[in-house]
Length: 458
Image 1 (spheres, rainbow, N blue to C red):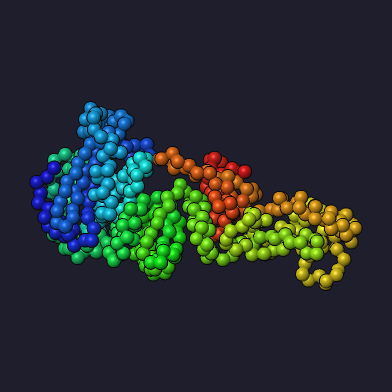
Image 2: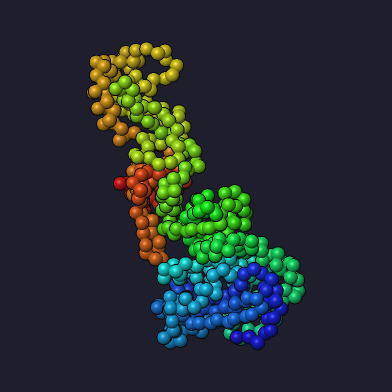
């Protein structure tokens, strides 16, 4: 703890529309997934008042000798201390909706998010790294770690690498920088460097509260206007920071929004499927337009023919028959498919457009077409086409049209199974959903995850 007077810093933070928290954590190590928090401390600034919070946390795992020697925190000290899940309800209300300042903030912010997810809680807020801030404020110096800042500015620190001592060191440094560089410069840099960004000040109250409660995880945001109509649906990988950025940009359909709903998901494909369900339940038309080109099978005068058609974003009773980047690629695939399964190109309707109407089947002229071609047996032709349809090639990104995809949250242990076929995903509403995002996500899945068990042939 420190006896320093932070009233100047508290007055400066009073001008901000949100509380400010200067925070530090101690942990069992530096691995975001394997290690746990052992101590949490912060100073909470709001409307000129300062609240100090400090607590040792039981990590339910042993402390290594290295960490014990570095921090002074031992297994014996943590005996009987609350777990993060037990302590979180007391502190999360103070942390949510604040500007969280930490030295190397990515470390502290990520550990907080992960501990929350592990315990079924959500957490995200605006963040500011005081290392980055120091680089902007004092570019003439090379080192900006906390030890260098303490030495350079002559700060008095009682116990380095204990959470509250480090919090006070950062707070005293910020007050010193405020005096040396002035409030306008410090305020401008805080706005610029906030990551995740701060929410805009002029939001409707309900929208501000909903955005403040978002996690920085996968999910789908549903935006409604004053008439409770859905005006926008967005998928997210890091919901809080992406929504904050959208709100700061403003304009577009989101300018009509007064209410925000959020559906958490377990991955990109799950998000796309949830988005499709929102569109379907609200009878909204996806805006993607033409996704790719596909092949439609149509009966013309009792004869099954194939047609290359644009594949538009939307809902399908069946997955697409083939998926192609352009009509030319689809026609090439059709010709190769017809040849492989001995299907008559004339009966299929896939002869080149430049051939005159009524021209005899060119394949039959060399004696290599189907029996149906020679006899005009449309029933035989239709049976052969139906038998070959499952083997229409899927172009662009995979030779396996139908796949099962499992998305997992490594922290909570939750998982969801999804089925995709030819660029469409199966929805709980018993329809296939296709849009450009489904295809983009599946392409990334095949490129990055095949062989790891997440993607397998159905």
